[in-house]
Image (cartoon, rainbow, N blue to C red; front, side, top):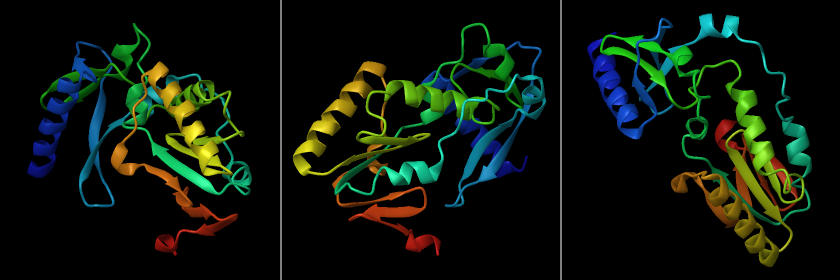
Length: 208
């Protein structure tokens, strides 16, 4: 790694340790670490789990179809869009399986206590969690695509009631949202590369 990447690695390992997301490891497993550049130019740490994924039995839980999600929003006039904070990291690794997630760095080996990005079954696991948590609300006033959650209602009064119900479920399941990425009680919201509102679905102009 180049010097800027090493500095970023040290910082991210320290942050993950302080947050309780990883711990030092003596596991015989050991994936390598790399960095991916984000849209804003900053670096995101990734672990190369390709070898582990080859040994993993694949979870066939279906990922939602985007067209099906959009079809639920047509009659709504009020929307809130919620984004979970570090969505995957809100899922704990099964006790006893932590050693399988070990990664090796220049500053030691570490294993994850929460679900890291890059595991082949992580998307299906997260979809299962979201669908179980919101099962009673799905296709009534909530649609979910991974950690993107849209609450939709025909009236503002109903929308406030729906928000209360969703936040009750968040509290019961100890799920947290990233406030700066959320939008509340809007008549138009961005969702999956589109803008939804007023009975219309349009491409997000910033992506054209």
